[in-house]
Length: 494
Image (cartoon, rainbow, N blue to C red; front, side, top):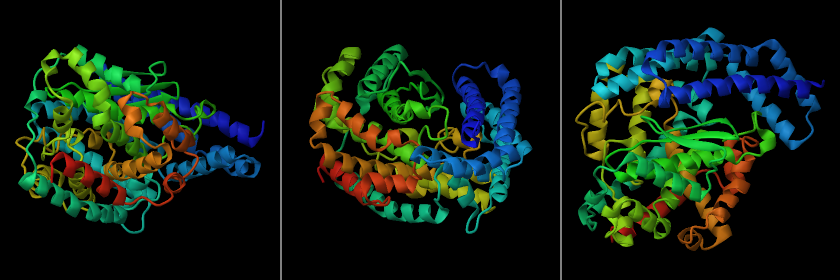
């Protein structure tokens, strides 16, 4: 067997272990009994250690090196490049450290669920402090030049640095705050009270699966369940899982499902020949998030989308039958500072991410103690959004990410916002009147363009190169700010 074929076979074994870990995590967040948390932590820790050892031993490294000489096709060359990067990163992390982080994440998730339900940050603080200690250790193992945050962010968005995030938020903050102020002072008010109430979960599940299937998520290769915090996970190209959650606001499940379906269709879009290889799936979290935000906001919050699906929703929930398309469109696009990031409107969303980015940086550098996070969080919300959380459950306990050890992740959400409009503008330039397609429920041309340009590229190109290939320019805020401003100035008649 050639080194290249041996490498592919060995990676398939590692991928099987990674998929088993992902299945355990999905189960923990959906169906697992809470009493299983301790055993699950040990199982995940052991499998993580084994997978890490297999992917970092000398034999694997030699196969990667030898395969560079054998690889001829673009796909094989790209696969070896991806595996070389992964090997370089993983060999910097001791196996026991990886196992400890995985064990802690499994326990921390249950601690977080309990703390959020009981509004008890103090009970979660020791676990969270340990998770940030691990993040600091991880950054030191990986190494960095300018800022400790760089090492962590690079794992989610290759080549990105804290300084890039600072520049991004500087570009966004002023225009976002100015638009929010204009809406508050001069905008035509929007009353969305009709969207708040009790909505039977089974009916919400039926409707959200209906629209997710309509836009192109393949239920023959996936499913949707409920979880405390919506997420998408992938076990293979043929098995992609979505989750949503049901709350006393009908938009929560609708837009949560569309968001996760955007992630899911990206994962389902890789060539089947790449299944169980490092080329399958999304290349970065920023580009991944661009797709979830595209389907949630650009498509899902468009008037054209609801021209097609509002009658279906009203048939499912007759109490909404008298709401006009224009009123519904305005209701679902209401701009109002709120506490919950995943349900924030498009205009204020990036301010939620900015709070998290600044707090992560401050805790990692020792500027902020974990025990003081609630007060720092609340002060930033008051400063940036003009509101103050009434509890830690709607404040610094609302996100699952820190309990998972996903520190350095949050800025990719704002990167996704920028890229969603940048990629969409190129799509519109190529396809023409997409609003007419959406209004007719014809999503195949839109999904087909995204599959060709983005989804089928998988991890073949580094994220910055992929953005250039798709849009012809580096990521920037111009398309996002122009699109957002035009949309909301029209909605609020500014």
